[in-house]
Length: 236
Image (cartoon, rainbow, N blue to C red; front, top):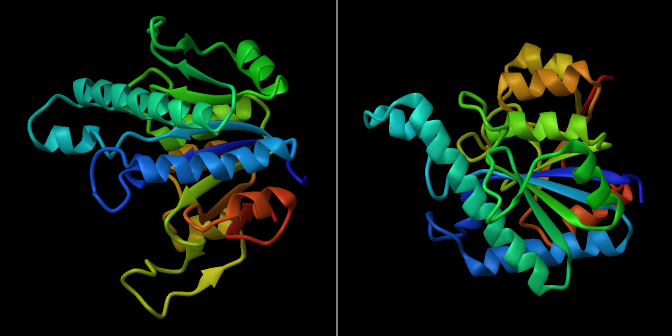
């Protein structure tokens, strides 16, 4: 396999499937089967998942909820998703650990870098919940930071589109898809890949990002094998 250790970033909205809210068990099972193939091939997998299918801090702010309060509520939503994914992964026979940026020992472990790395070395899937434990940081930032901390080879951002485009392909049918692009070109063209904090963390640490369609069967396995899937964002 091309990548020994990956950080897979999933959006909370993806878990809702066609319902648009909550958690769709069919999506959980599909993702679990895709992750199982990668684990069985020998790649270590860490996951960061959003909470937008349950609660979004930005929308709460618009409704009059304090930003800090809303962000903490969003962090708790990511723990709910992490626990749901943990249950699905264990149903397909994988050992998992949920590690939280906020201490809640009754349901998950606190994040400790060395312990997380040890879990990965033992073949366990590690799911990072509750962001980094601080408001004003997105789950994209969590993905970048945790990937750097555990020395992942790449950040894989699983989305519903098959890569990075010059414009939103769902709105502009003439949008051009890139197979590879540099960090600098993403900056220059103002492309929306991750939030700026997360993107800059990856650039400064020379950590490549691959944006790909997680909903297409075998995409994750092909990507980790080294096949050209999605869009690779790197220093070159």
